[in-house]
Every structure is written in structure tokens, then in C-alpha cells.
Image 1: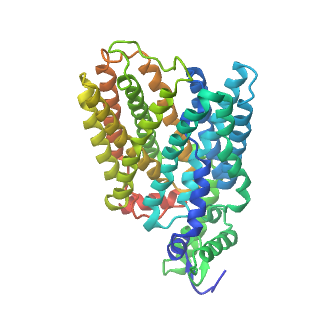
Image 2 (image 1 turned 120 degrees about the vertical axis):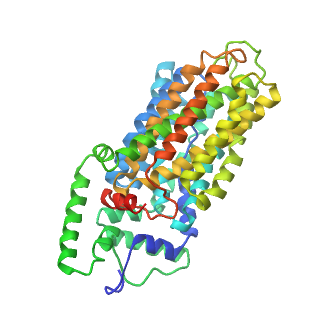
Image 3 (image 1 turned 45 degrees about the horizontal axis):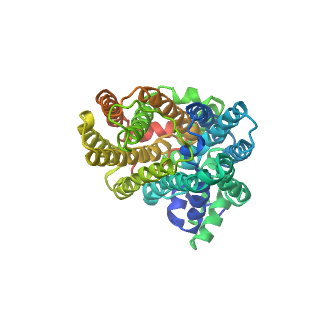
Length: 472
């Protein structure tokens, strides 16, 4: 593994080999594994959406635990297999009950999508991390647009079974390419599998036409501990750190997430994800109810009267485009001003643009305010989805992000239940105020989050995570 007289960490290795073909391949594969939630409900039946969301809630936690316990690749593989098989079987569902069960199962598989963020994050050098994680997030928006386009083309002519079947193609491709993608070297380092991590980094350096640093790849926790000049004290600290790491590997992740060292971060992220998801879907529902020509006081519905109506998919397509400028803003500002400040500014902009809708506006103004608000709120959530895996240590990263994502799904499930009782134009004040309150709560949680992750190395265990907080 190199000259034994010198040592280097994983972050130093990634900085040396830089961003190139190696990371592009990882990013492209992760893009295949990200599927938009919109595609879960083919017939716009609210119960199908509900069971799919429930499945995603369960899957978000399940695959997070699998990923932290057995590796990122195994978590991705399990989620992809379940999504592919259940998704394909959905196209042949003989009755409504079996369709519900299968769509819930698909949701379980799609719940593992957050693993992609943790996996890709662990390959990218610090200097490129924010930008390329935003690029990864754009796969979600692009996937939503592509799914809407597919539905626009398929549904009126061929029906929902063909839509469900064709929607599994990206996962089939991901399964075929599974053997070519590497395990996260950072995960391998936390498991003491430094030789495997070294060979992966060596292949990455070759692809990027760079050379690894001269010396021995060493765990971040070991190099930080052994930097002390007192040999006996260093040995004692090293032994203590290894004991701590062994203890952490044997401790259930949920307990570590709620330990006194992480509980503040965990609870604030839960609040942020719940409120952000709630307000995001609230704005989408307001868009459909206030901007597509319903009569002013007509009771709204979450179902389409005619699933073969192409305008349904045109609306999804057009409103999804509103998120692209927000993603561009996030990409430009994320690494310049920091994650927390970026999220706060985006939330404030979303709040301001939604505020005029407390009272009824004309159609053009309503559409403009809703699109602008959605742009900023969705961009803020994009930054949050980057901050969350950055802020958690490697040994609980996937589980922490998985549970946080699951809490966000609860916000997505609750929001339509409140929105069902809205009037299109006559009863918009209270719902808008409610969504504004959730945006304010999101902003408050951002202010209280412990520390900024811009330009910071990822931590591998809770002890180093605490050191980062103290440095702040």
C-alpha cells in the first residue's frame, strides 16, 4: 500500500486524484437509481399514493441500516432488486388489492434512494463536493420531467400498465451495471478494510490520470490520534479510539443518533425535513388547485377525473420545470456562502413569494408567485439533502439520513390530508398561512443546526464529529 514511512488519509487521497472519470461514473450510476415519487401513482388514486409513501417511509429506514451495516453497494442492490421486481409485477397486477401491495413494496425499494447521496458524497473531494452533489440532486428533477413526459405519451394510448412496466427500465440498467461500481472507500475504512479501500482509490486515480500520495493509507481517526508527540499517550488514545469504534459498531444506530452527542443535530434535521417536505408538497397542491383553471370556489380533489387527459401530465411537466432555476441557484451559491446561509436565504425568498397568496390574486400573479416559491423551497431542500449526509459521521450516515428522509415522508403524507379540504380560491388563506408557518419552522431549525459543513472533511465516527463541533 505504499511507502510505510509516510501516511495519508482518505480525504487527502481524494483531493490528490481530484474529480474526473472515476467520480463521473459513480454519479451516473447513482442517477439511474434515483426515481421520482410522482411515478409511484399511475392512476392518481390517493390510496395508492398513500401506501407508496408508507413503503418509502419504511424503506428509508431499512436501507439506511443495511447500508451502514453491510455496505453502500448492498443497500443499493437490495433497494434496486425490490423496486425492479415489484415495479414490473405491478404492471401485471390482477386486481386492485394486489396493486396496492405491490406499489407499497415498490415504495420500500424507492425508499433506498437516499443511499445514493451518502455513497456519492464519500467519493467526491471537498473542493467539488457541493457542486457535484447538486448535480446529483438534479437527477430527481430530470427524472420527474422524464416520467411526466413518458406518462404524457404512454397513458392516453396504452394505459397505466405500460407506464409502470417502462418505468422499471432504469433499475434494470442499474442492476446490469452493479458489478462495475465500487464500494465506498470511506465505508471500507471505517470497517478496517484499508487494503480494499486502497485498491479502489488506485483504480480511481488511474481513471483520473493522477497518482495517489506516497505512503500508507490510514484511517482518519488513527492519524488524528497519533499526531501527538507523546508516544505512550498516543498509544493510549489510539487504543481508546479503537475501543470506542468497536463499541459504536455494536450499538444500534438509532441509539447513537439520539445520544447526547447527536440528538440536537438529529431532532433539528427531522424538523427541517418534515416542514420542508410539508411546505414543498403544499406548494405543489396549491399550484394544481389555484393555477389550472378550476372554478374559484370549486372543492378541489387530489384525483383526476380522467387519467387519460393529457393536460394532467402537461401540468406536472411544466410545474417541474420551475425547480431547475432553483437548482442552478443552489449550485452557484452552495460552496461560496455555505450550506446554512444558502438554505436560510432560499427559505426567506420562498416565504416572501408565497406571502401575497394569503389573499386572492389574479391567475398570472398566482402562477408567478407559486412557481417562484416552489423554486426556492425545492432548492433549499436540495441543499438540505446535501447537508444531512455531510453532517452525520460515516458509521451512522446512511441510517441517519434514512430516518430523516422517513420523517420527511410523513410530512408528504400529512400535507394532502390537510389540502383535501381546501377551497380553490375561497379558502386559500388558512392553508397558505399554514405553509408559511412550516417554512418559518424550517428556517428556525436551520439557524439552530450545530455547525456549517462547507469545506469540512467528512467525519467517520461520533467522537470526531464532536471535535468538528467544538472547532466551530
